[in-house]
Amino acid sequence: MPRLRTRPVRDGDDIRAFFDAIAREYHECHGDADRLLAYRLALARRLLAPVLGGTLLEIGCGPGTHLFGLAGDFATAIGADLSPAMIEVAERIRRTHRRAAHIALYIEAAERLAPIEDESVDAVLCVGAFEHMPAKAAVLAQVQRVLRPGGRFACLTLNGDALWYRQLASRLGYEVRHLSSDRFVGTAEMQALLAGAGLALAESGYWRFVARGDMPAWTARCLQWLDALGAVWRPGLFRGGLYVCAEKQQAVRADAASRPFARKETVAAARIVQPVRRASRSSW
Ligand SMILES: C[S@@+](CC[C@H](N)C(=O)[O-])C[C@H]1O[C@@H](n2cnc3c(N)ncnc32)[C@H](O)[C@@H]1O
Image (cartoon, rainbow, N blue to C red; front, top):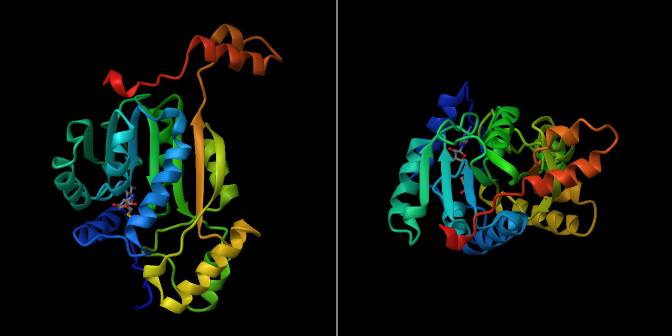
């Protein structure tokens, strides 16, 4: 397995061109595809459990592997990706999907999401794509815009705090970024980004990720040991994947909000006035 070489990029066009070029052959290269997919889907379902049955949007959906895997759990599933070639691959799969009529795909950057109306989705998912999105605050501002109050954002990305990404890889002469614009955030930065976008953290943790396809087998085996060690000790340092789940806060009723020193009460009152809109599966 040849070592990863980071490709220099200047702007979004270069990022799009990179993903366009790999779209047709894009496949799971970090382990057993079915097992890894089942693992990630189970995590996504757990994080998005309160909003299952509503509308799902996946940003950076690529060929739609996770989107199609979750389409049966939601009334509507929408995929958006910067790369026309990725969406072309996804569209071919969509046509034969048993829930094809409930799935929509858009060629669209996560920083814009122009076709998605304000407060129109219950869940936003991002898997293996946040690290490739240079304007992370702009992405989260869009996530906040399109989520309904009470809606959830689940993101599975790489753990920027991991010893491997922070120090070990460069010391051993490994490159870890596919694109020079890739950036892996750690827990503190992710939490600050979410707070800056007005999204309330519901859960944060680590998921099993070793970029086996990007390195020689012996290195991957060492990282798997580190990841396993991280599952029981110092996860922030040793685990390869970081996940977060955040919620868009319920709107606060104006008259209640104006009352001082009653924040808890205000939020509780707002929940009664404006419950989370959750379409049941049977209503679609
Ligand atoms: C590594 S692939 C992951 C695809 C898919 N989420 C999966 O897990 O199979 C990253 C995807 O993010 C997309 N992407 C990168 N930057 C993006 C952006 N700013 N907006 C939308 N999509 C983006 C790429 O085109 C690519 O399809």
